[in-house]
Image 1 (cartoon, rainbow, N blue to C red):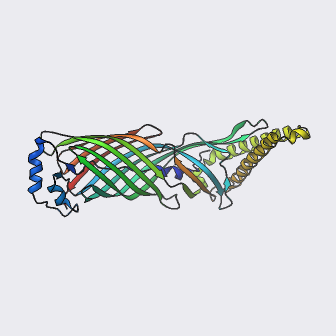
Image 2: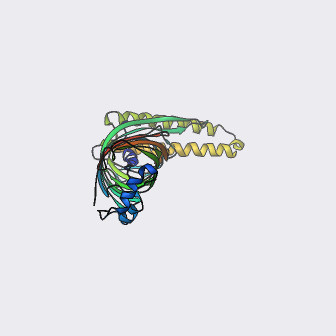
Image 3: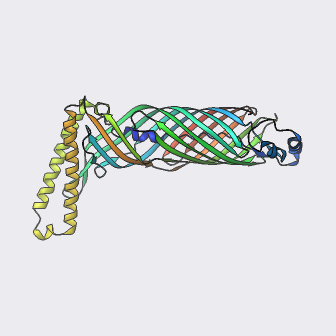
Length: 373
């Protein structure tokens, strides 16, 4: 069964961290006294940031006030699904949370983004996000039901890998502070990812604190920065969608898997009924037996109803649709970040960053050009 029942849910994890390591730096140290003195007497030539001239005259070295970055971002991440409901041909939705189990489902995304930014204040950068992404979703799941001994077994399984295109737009801000080449940045952004299979664009919020140090080269404007930090992503919990059944299931094998699943459900139901009928009245009054019997009947009925409805939908697969509703969250909210940036001059910078630990791995490469406004 080439099922892609939940495919669009995993695209929501496509979140972008595109902080660019430039900052307003407090000049300190005797060897930098000449630069500090020159800033105090020079007239600041740009309109932004607000209070830029006053801050520069107090001995702060400001970056150019506007910039444009191009970034390539890759991410592979796992998520957790719950409160799954599925229906066919706009009929009732069946809650499958009890009988469907997922095994390491993940989304892999590669995106090219453009990031225009300005320094609104000397210690506050604001920016926009515009991006196009290609995503690959991998799902492994199965339908599980109990028997008379409350042992759960898989009666139907599905796994799939499918590709989607997505468009992302959003905005963010980065408060920063820098002293003597050391700096702290608290990047945060909100983004909406538009995918045709979703009812509405998916929302994500990213927070990325970073602590770093910039080391100067012999050329006055050249330096290299290194940093460590974290990456935290939050996605909106609810997802609803509507997909063609032929886009979800491999029709050449779906009917066989449904038939086998229905046979296994019937077999387990017979075992449960036989076990229950073989109990004495006193044993049937035992609360643990009652709970076991009710759980088995509920799960078997739910699996049987779902597979029977799917069986009917497959008879008109070319015209059938599937509707779903679910909740999802990242398996891990945080992962670790390390990065570096080479500044060729105050106009041009090259950046590399990697994220790892936990259930999310990511990488970013970027080119930035800055200019004064």
